[in-house]
Length: 363
Ligand code: GLY
Image (cartoon, rainbow, N blue to C red; front, side, top):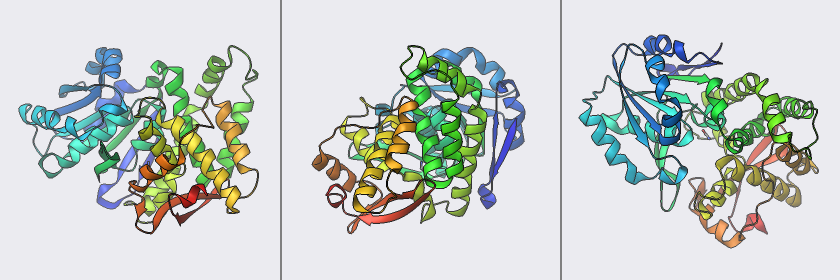
């Protein structure tokens, strides 16, 4: 078991990372919460698989379970009143605790419910997907989508504790297993070339060709041997960035590498065609190709990034109408009247924020 401490003054918390330790959750929860009532928010997929485990995960607590419909398209503001009503009906007070048990959608909605109910109560993140382990469960960004755009309503509300048990990854479909590697590759690109190279080295060691019919399965088994190390370093990078800039005034923007185009692709395809990791994978390659074309990025980096993402079964080229994507990007939170803050790679391991117009980026 490994521990990372996110140092944010009175909003500080620990991230526990390990494998098969869900039976110890009550002990860790008890260290940050002296009450007895837990309001657990999960989704239909996770609930179906892990319902039997709740009695061990939350032993000694009075817990109630609220089940959301699974999927990004259900992360909209219209879902909130039913959650608030359930919280009131359960008699939840300001001293009680929400638990987010699921992927990024569950974490964002549950965190937003905790941030807004009675002007804010505590919450704990138990992320069950790689993307939520390495990104959304850490850093306190919570919120819901509007029809006009992703995450347009939300808050910064740090969890009291993050419990990352890789046991939960075993039930992910292959698609959602690989989805999370988009964010892991991102950390190498924006912050740590050695980490990028380490990931390349691990993937190359799989010992099976990408054309082999068992490649997807063999690579997954191989990556599971390194997943603690990869999740730990990803969370460590995220924590370092968030500690320096909790509210995204400057440095934290680097975490949006590939996300401006990626979010627009997700929205343009109605959150149905591409997962988050898939959309940002293509987004990271596209913005790097654009950077190279405009002379901001060292030549050859887009090819290296695309090679790694492709080996991780992620798409590196998604066709989209640039005018429609530009329109969506203008509504992004990173957009202001004088342009959008794009995260541009200088070279792998180093990025720069550059304000560029939504149409100009594609010229
Ligand atoms: N996912 C980007 C951030 O947490 O800032």
